[in-house]
Length: 133
Image (cartoon, rainbow, N blue to C red; front, side, top):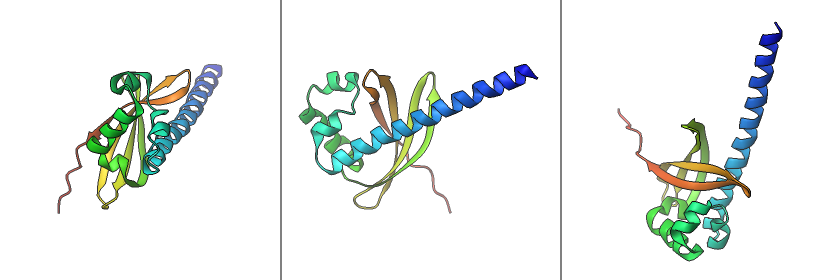
């Protein structure tokens, strides 16, 4: 019985930590999306991981990439957080974004925890799900 109680206690603790991480991750992504809507690229840059910052070199380069490559992120009208998953030790947050024209897009955000908290380490645009009649 003690073993069962210990396992249950560990599971509850892990679930609580995962829920806290999920809230923090949603906050980071949501804050970056809001910064893009406000055209505050310097603020959006703060949520990018060191890898992303090395890759793009400056907030301006980063902002141009987002504006050209991810217009649904640059002009997002509505955001819904879907699944947070652990894939091979990496956390991925699925996000449904409605663009300025009303189109829906599913994005997958890879998140890493740094000394500065959770940061966005990459974004993938997922294929739209098949919709059949």
